[in-house]
Amino acid sequence: MASTKVEFHTQAPDKLLYACRLLRKAAASGTRVQVPADEDTLRQFDQLLWTFSNIDFVPHCLQDAPAQMLENSPILLTPQPQADATRAILLNLGSGVAEGFEQFDRIIEIVCEDGDDKLQARNRWKRYAGAGCDMSSRNLQTQTPR
Image (cartoon, rainbow, N blue to C red; front, side, top):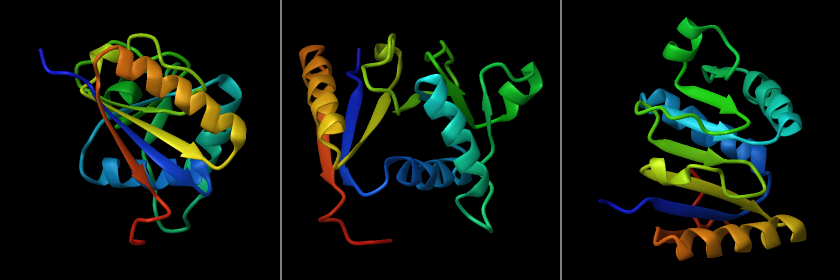
């Protein structure tokens, strides 16, 4: 069995805005992604996906959407990841490791400069590494802007 690949994208200036950009690319390429987070973050993120760009639309829905919308939306915002073979990528915006993370082929964690966020990310790293995941890290401050 292949190990889950976990990517930590560190030093994001704005965690949610960076997540919007990642999901814009994912949706444009036809990639389906689940995004778990607490209810407040999901509400805020849902609004940001509608407003972060004047020219782009990132098709998404919350887990309580009608079945047809759930089926057709590439991005699912949910308090807990759902078993779904069509969405093999998890973009975790939660503070802890999502239950059932092992079912995903790839997990993306975004870490901002906030001290609490860094501490929570270190704990998530340890949990994933302890579970035998294939770990990698990308420092966004040293990347060439796109």
